[in-house]
Length: 120
Image (cartoon, helix red, strand yellow):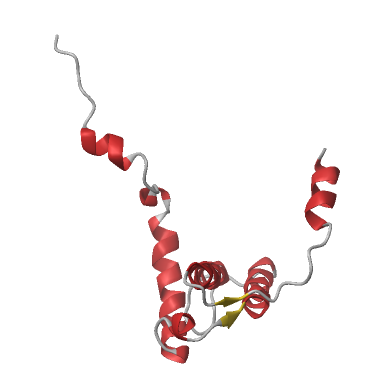
């Protein structure tokens, strides 16, 4: 029996981000939320004009609170508020990577250390 050799493409591919692990449902729903923002604000607007981090974090929190409070579909788009939260987080990540994020976070606090201590 011949020894099976590993595909060179597989070796190279294993070092790259595993995009296939992102669930298709999440991508599809998030794209609807992004499309809604595209219509309202223009495509890729955050790459043209810097955006404030905390304004977008507030939006993420509002979307999460709507979902926690029982809303399963955004009234405008019909997709989950979770998809809108994902879309907003994606915009934050992209803006940060493109140098278009205004980092207006408050000074560092102790939340991470407190959570770590309380988890022990």
